[in-house]
Image (cartoon, rainbow, N blue to C red):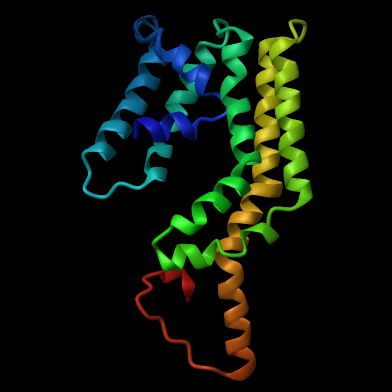
Length: 204
């Protein structure tokens, strides 16, 4: 769950690392101790559980956010502070190229077919948005006038808008569009649907 947590709190990963570096002083604070115990319980419990899914650790994020809020007055330099959101925006900007490069090497036929028409889902708006988000983040990194908390707020807003308007629609289309199309064809012709080697309860 270590990499899951670091990726899951994006774009505030640098704030989390800065907060954890002050773990001794946070432990002396009642609220800080409560937040640490909150996150530690979830982290340890699911680390030792038989079933591990990435979203299980989300139940401990509330404690992490409290820790980050308690450390908001001692933030790292603006370069390190905004490096995670910049890396996120650049990674999302290059995602179509990464999929295109990796597609021929995929052995799973289901995943390969699911991503086969990926190019049609990444619109010019997707590319322009994350290019602009990366440019704004670079500006924030070199600008010394705006408060760091305002930059963090703006980075979070850019991340939420980007995922809501562009990333999640692409993921949804890649996963569900072919199934939806097949379902509409089956409904139109009154076909019988048969699932073969596909354990996806949400398909029904």
